[in-house]
Amino acid sequence: MPPDRNDPNRELHSIAVVTADESAFREMRRALVGSFKTTLASTEEQIKSLVEDAHLHGILFDLDSIGEGARDGIDVLKEIRAIRECSAKPYAKSIRRTR
Image 1: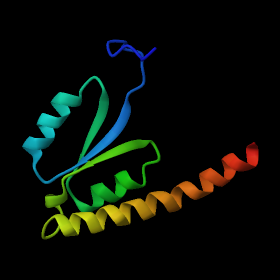
Image 2 (image 1 turned 120 degrees about the vertical axis):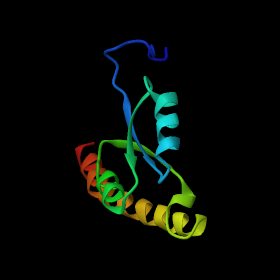
Image 3 (image 1 turned 90 degrees about the vertical axis):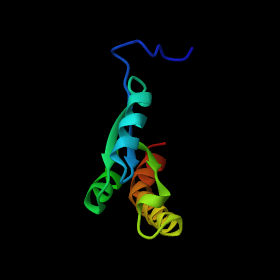
């Protein structure tokens, strides 16, 4: 049975929204409230901090908010993926060892 969305004790997953458009973030947060904890990342330092956060479950990424357009945004996504995969490997190894 799926969790009750109205249960105040249920755990909410954390997601980051990467965008330079704060009004778009406010709209997304309004739509996601009650289902997710949302955090805005609009600077390089904020993005790096969120990428390194092991408790982050997902990222909504505005491709056009990075660099010169979507192609630069895709390059950043590739970098994020590589960082998250590298940081997950020690965790995955420890899980395999315990089984």
